[in-house]
Every structure is written in C-alpha cells, then in structure tokens.
Length: 170
Image (cartoon, rainbow, N blue to C red; front, top):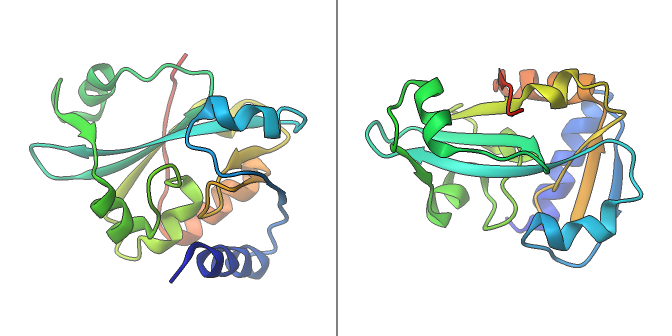
C-alpha cells in the first residue's frame, strides 16, 4: 500500500472519530529545517519524531517532541528504564514493517498501522498540555503536514491503543 492510500486510510479513520484536521501539502522534506518554511504560517506546535529501538530488549519506541526541543537519547533511555546508551535509531525496515512508512515519515499519525501495539509512544507533555491550537505531524507522507487539536490527537491515540507516555523535554 502506497503513502496516498495510507493517507486516505488515516483520513477515513479520523472522519470516523469525528476528528477535524487541517493539512498543508508541500514538497517532500526530510528535516524540520526543510519543513519550517512551508508550515511557519500555521498556529500551533510543529513536531519532530524519532523512531527508536532498545538494543537490549528489542523494543520499539516512537518519540514525538516539539520541533525546537533537544532529545538526549541517554537521558531518555534512563527515564524509560532501558539503560543509558541502549536507545538507537531503528532501521527503515522496522519502520516499514510496523508503521508502513519510510524515512522522514514516522509520526504519531502512523501509529494506526501498528495493529499489535508493539511500538511504545513517548510524547512531549507540552504537545498535550501546552495550550497549542493544533499539533502538526506528517500524515503518512513527508510531502504534507497535518494538524490536529491536542484533545483530538489524544482521542486518535487512544483509539489506536497507543496511550502516550507524557515526558517533559524542557
């Protein structure tokens, strides 16, 4: 299934949950820096997303944070109880298998593809509680950016079985 079909499936799920969204199509981007000129007019929090694996237990983690936050993998590993130095970027094959997306497209919106809930989701607590009008992610493709209200994002995550672990990255 290609990204267009997956995006349509995502939008269908959002509609079924009565979740409204805004979406901006733009050229394909692979970094937050490349994306920002296309989304800086939007009101809310733009995210960056890391797809990680725990090298010891082979667990998979998706981490979504505000784009301007620093993520220290060693500190995060300690807080998650996987041991300092044990979090690594997962390879694209794992991303394709679990989230049905490739490099640059792993976001919270892809979690609906993780049917067995084997990916644990860590979310910057500011995205849920920071008073943002919307929170922005790629919708199965890095050639678009989709914004959901924080409460709707939480509703979506609950529906997919991915209750987020909220973590402060300040």
